[in-house]
Length: 229
Image (cartoon, rainbow, N blue to C red; front, side, top):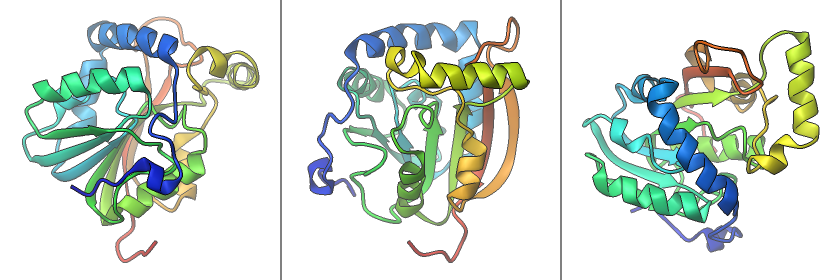
């Protein structure tokens, strides 16, 4: 296993602790699997993956059931204690090998160039430092390695964008475990040096009123071949 202690990289094992929000998220995320169609989104996100995969911010492990049999191993990093325990339970039910470990996205406790693919799913909204997180993602992927992403962020017209920014400056991160609604994941991936592949905008839920959290993007990116960290 390419895991090493989070402490060795200057990060406490429980770098994130939002127990109240974690329990709330665990409930609503399970409901969203069917009522909002998140299960179908997870299938599209993970179809075709193979080899060794790192999932950053695995939450309560809802992706695990959707990994195809071509994946040889998943290393799932989750910093929040309550969600990590739920992810461990989900890993036991998965059809592919899943190892759940503590760690912060900005200092991943794994070796460089150890993975064929990486998955980020509704996590870039809540990391403390997007730039450092994506730098770590580049580090742990082999050259040519693939990133699958499903993230929410900036979207809608001018009024919605202003609303999202206002929420991020005030109550939203405090109520939702550090989540931000006005970040731009596609621009962040491009700035971090990833090559963007196909991606598409998705509204969640697909039917109903558009909320500040509704503007999502589902797609693929790559660490360019021949690059060194």
